[in-house]
Amino acid sequence: MGTRFPTHASLVLAGLVHVLGGCKPSGVLVLPPTTTQDAPDSGLSLAEPGLSVPPYVQLREPGSAHLRFEMVLDDRASEVEVSMDGGAVEVLEPELWASDVDYSWDVGDPDVAHPDQPGLHVIHELIFEDLAPGTQVAYTVHAPDEEPWSGSFRMPPPPGEPFRVAFVGDTLWPVSASIYADMATHEPDLLLHGGDLQYQTYADDTWSGSMYDQAPVAANALFQPTIGNHEYEGLDEFGLMYSRLFSQMGDSGPIEYYAFTYGGWRFFALNGETDLGDEGSLQQVWLDAQLERVAEDPDIIGTVAFLHRPSYTLGRHMPELDVRDALEPRFGGGRGALVLAAHNHSYERFEVDGTTWLVDGGGGAGLYDIDEHLDYLPEDAELRVTGSTSHGYTILDFDGDGSILLRRFALGQGLVDEVTLGP
Image (cartoon, rainbow, N blue to C red; front, side, top):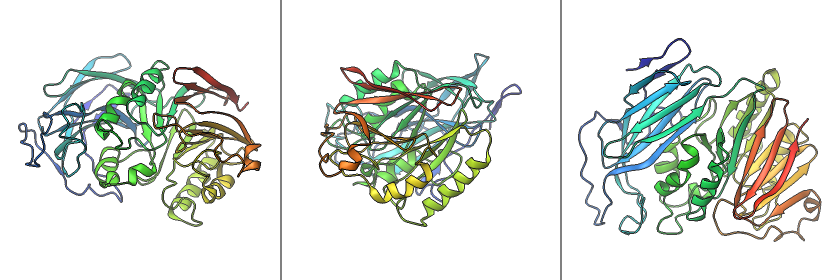
């Protein structure tokens, strides 16, 4: 089943077995390697079988991460070359999980490079376990009839060691491809996505296409998304796509929300689309238990929350005041360093009693005026430090002294905001 690495690491092959309540996803089965599968008769001109989702890596429990990629209409086995900290290369065979997915978007358009095809989808997965803090893992994926895909990722370093995070939200083709290409030059350790990974607005705006767009970054950074409103819209995107591709993220919580620790910082991927603003909800109870553990852990430097809808904004979509009421006593007043959000397609930074509330939904969707509700929210307007109606992304450098260098880069403009948070 697995290949043992010397002393500091081991790798265990496993499958997608924990989704929503710890059960195997509906319709998912273990698939022994066989041959290329015929596409179902859908009446559409389907693309050729191949790699529908390029490699990406996500954190699980402490010391553990999974590498995944997906083949469509093809259930043949693959191989992955893996090296730890520049050591010997091991050749490993991922576990395969197959689903018959009834989901499609612009499959019949011959100009769409990466359509979402119905039929057989096979996720290839390697689970890395018992990795030492800061382990650098290099890999090369050899999928059937595909060019090799190489990448690397860095496991969470010990508390106090510096690391870099990229944040983006509301990504939409074709601008998103340029944003990710620019972001890749910063070589982040973590890629946080604030939700609305795609919109199904254009023919090329597919789930498969969105994963290809982010590949220049996700191939070399741990990818941790949260859920946006478009993940719940139409065609059961949450059940058929998000939950299938992104199960078992973090070390606590169900798939709708979760938490993980990186470099001594506790990150909370929250779901503002459901019960976060409801007093006493399951998500609030879970969050309170997590924050109690943070308070008792001397190795935790600080906390960062990220979710889709903003609690502070002057843009098109009004702030979620019930969620603000839930987050203020938990992260406000300096209790949390940062609350990151998206949803409004622009950039805004608010400073409120020692906590930074950031909006960056400039990932490619049509831009919104940052002052659309300026006159409706005069008290919030006094709290906004800066803003920019632009496409772009945010880079966060976490230093060993607990400070965070925040920089916002606008596509075609460069740096539009820079500030150091904390000590």
